[in-house]
Length: 301
Image (cartoon, rainbow, N blue to C red; front, side, top):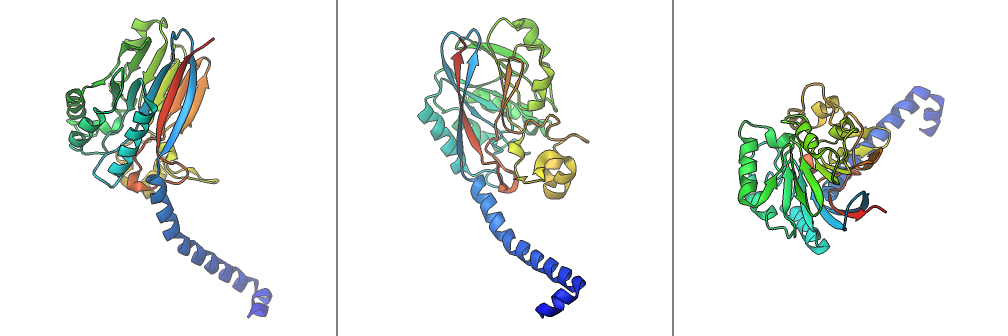
């Protein structure tokens, strides 16, 4: 048999191909199992950001992209773990950066009261994401639930919190996205932390003072494979693998046009941090574990 393989290159290639397909088939269940395990494993990320003009240190906790839909996208136990990490960190301020539900806004009725109980000396503030605007009633339903839970939604406005201007925009895709309303009033005079769901908006604000923008939206790419890049990079991949997510993306749009998938980015004196968030569609996660983020703002010397 071995002799026949070496004597017949066509037979050799065919058998190698069949063998490779057999190995790939055997690895699919293991990969599926691993991806679910990673989707349920919380990572605690920490960073320090020096802020010009900040008078005293300030600790923020960020949660993003929870996508609570009673199980398929995120387990309740993972949300509990994230909130426990924030409690242990003793954050001064909690910020939520969008996509609290997936499509149906009704699950917010269970999630909002729970988020509202997160301990935070200076309160809890939120912006909405593209999935929070999927139906005509989503924005109103979520905003109302947050208000009842004492979570303040910032939509193209800002407020003074702990010596910083804490600002928030409407979603970059679904709107209303009107950052001019914020920056015309601030005129670069105060240390500014901007909450904006989609990180692409950061690169359009280079002329404004954005000491730190906190975003989510990307899930870190959700699945990141060598040589292939993030699964969520292009709509064509979504149509094939995650058609339910593709419906929420404007025609022809990538999840991010700027390549701002996760972690820290900088443009001049402006900083961006992109959280991988908690939820994962179909609970698939490879190379992008869900995260809760603790950010220490420190006075810049």
